[in-house]
Image (cartoon, rainbow over all chains, first blue to last red; front, top):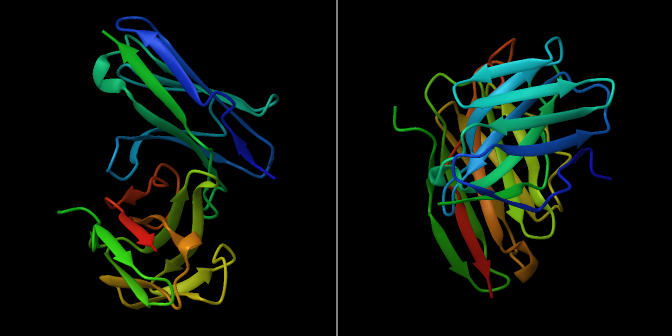
Length: 112
Length: 116
């Protein structure tokens, strides 16, 4: 039973356009949500996070939106750059930062 | 800081052999996590420690897997005996004591294990 779902295994976007990566979760006990980026042969690196008390968090070109009623979050990358090409993982945890659950990942390709 | 350090980066072994993976967390971090990544199951949490004490090992697949953290700067994940289905990339991650705005984990580069 997948508690964190990323239904799009892959996404291709033109450079300069917006990339939107989606994530759905089923456990209403999750309080904290994170996005990680992973390049080949490297470990995942933290990108941006959001607490359940917020509905938006922005950091430069990256914005995460949270819709608690729909149990849905999304990561927007604007403008997309070729260096953004990577696998993006959505993750969720309780408010104590324990019991991390990762989604299966979405492979983003930004085409020049 | 050098970040989370894992060794070896690659390990190839024969079925039935013992395998030991090593991890040095970031200094000052209170939590240490072991993950396994496979194509079929994605990134799975195996076990995590808080202040060197195992807190949740419910993700450890079988008794063949064991993990220890003898001190704050070192942890091992051991598989004995190893089987081909254990082939995966194993990641170690560490974090500060979780709290508001401090949940992010820092991952090592991973150990790619191949069991033939």
